[in-house]
Length: 296
Length: 326
Image 1 (tube, rainbow over the protein chains, first blue to last red):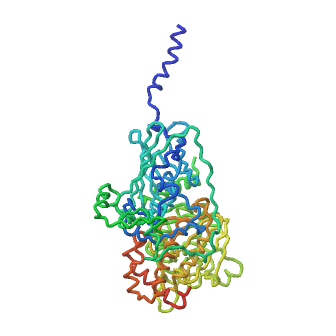
Image 2 (cartoon, rainbow over the protein chains, first blue to last red):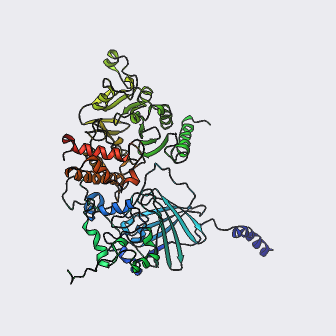
Image 3 (cartoon, rainbow over the protein chains, first blue to last red):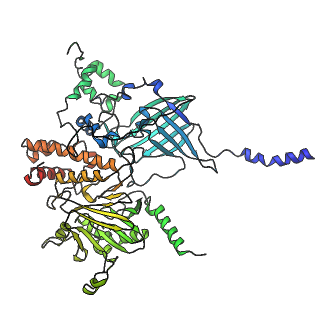
């Protein structure tokens, strides 16, 4: 009788055990994810940054090309530019990230996924609770406004309300009208992040970038403080820039790597493998001679 | 158990969360007035014409700019959903109809605190809110023969002639700073010190190239100087973001990074046109050079303020020995 009573007391648990857990992450992405171990992946784009005039492989419009041609790296010495953070569509490309979930205490439902970027210590929120994006007159930020949903085991994220930033750190712009979609795909201890940038102002086609990360058991991101200083004395409001047709640095990339100058100018065509055939056949123009130290 | 204050607060909250704070459809140009809480005591109202800033508190309501005349009643109704307190001050950032058109309606819906010998001498001293602007706004609106944007009841009642006017209202300092020869010759920047919000008028917008009203006393160099001034007033939290928020004359809510981007564009295009002016190029040659092609996707327009008009205004402004000389 006593045994029956105990079992009866446990029976109420069964329905609870049969109820599925609240909609939460299909895959747990929590933890520190590093990419320094695989920095060789697109390395020039990362720490050193792209070369001036390298627009190869980016589906830019003429407007973006013209703007990047005017870009002067000295702009980064202007105090208002020194601490500008990488936007959310670029920051995870630069260095490691840390991901954690925000769960509702009572329902244990997933409210949001947060990401900390090593670069500039920025943090973004991906809302998972179905809230709408803000109106078009709301503030734009470097992190933008992100909402996410699970597509199977893949976290799909849509980001709007981004502040104007860069698609490459050589002056190629990404406008504040861009909409970015991301897919976070976990394979055991590896994470792939695919970023798709659609920018009606400066791109003719979506620009797609993937980055890979390795799970770090003892991963930890250090602080990334930044404080503006006056590096160069200039008149108030002076903005370093190259006047049209005067930027002599633009030829260096093509010359250094021995590729046709036309290819260096980028555009959608240069994204696709078929373009390599055009380069080989000479259809893309004649490469300029490789500049070596001896030749100088 | 009925609690009128609670009911009123709930109604306000519902209004803000549904039709206002996030907008009925999230678009600013749908004919409705949308209310966006900015921070502190300040709200941004979108859809009346130019953007409108509203500051509220225990002392009443302060309104910066009043939109187009035809939207004045809708604007007033929107203001009343934020606060049913008395409208005490209206400030005009400049004299254009999309910023002063609702002056009469908004001003006359309010009142000025008046007493002592003033009310004896001026019996209408308390009628309508005090309407503040730089004196050049008053001059433009009241100029003989000029097509006035508003009738006399909507002209500034308290114009200031020096570079600055200060108020203390709703527990914070309000700094009104005149910017000479920028968008016009009567521009004012309004800074809410505790709320940490700046309303710029049309010196700064996110929708167009800088609108330089040469006939109204504007200039490219004055516009850049005013943008420099705005930037100098902003303190960001981190990464050139947050902190001081900026309500532009048109477009979305902004912070430092947005104003810096706008100044960058303005300075770069100024530099390009100035280079051609110095080389003796004609306006037609400058236009043919398509010097704005990199920013046209962002600011180019075929509407009221076309890219051609902007280039022409910069060219003429720089060619003018008085305002164009660096």
